[in-house]
Image (tube, rainbow, N blue to C red; front, side):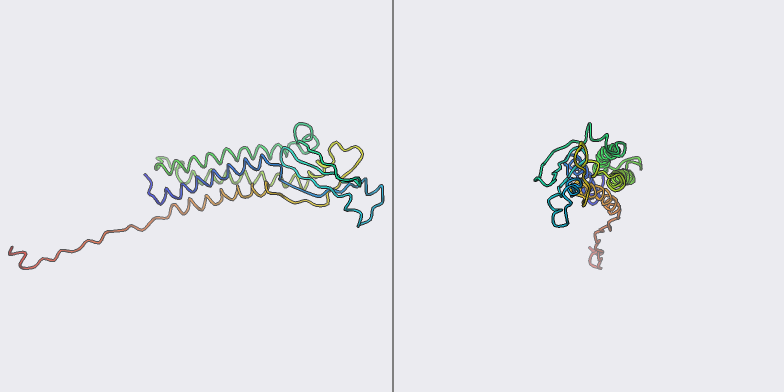
Length: 232
């Protein structure tokens, strides 16, 4: 059985892995990966709008990996519409890259559970095989954190190099054309960053658990023998 010191750190490692699992589920479920401002370029061109009037033509958009919302501002007031990525909108995007992000996130979920299982195993008993020990915990956390980092990088690539927001904003628009004037990552994106950071923190936790504690030795009092004791 591992000592109380290692049990405490392995317990913390399992909690961090479980928190990463929960955070990834939240990021997948909520439609708040990115938000932005979209300008109705067609409306601006029609009325030859100047800078003070551009505010009337700037709407809002936010979206996640499965759904989102858009507010169109084309000079006649805001019109809100909901949209879903699957099954039609994904065809207008870089479908391969978008599906890759999803697959990486689902893989990160599985790896987070595996790393949690290894931490619990080491908390309960000392494994016979080294691959199931602290090295195994580190391995699975490196894999989980690396896969999550790849998912984050793939999403950023889709936004920056494949005009993800502009493609979504112009989906099924026949009369108006929208251009993106502002973009910012929202809470779901940063939740994924926190999830990857949890696995990095696990590496530190496992390293700390391997620090040997100083042994506490009881002081043995030396018996003093006097001449009276010998005679007795």
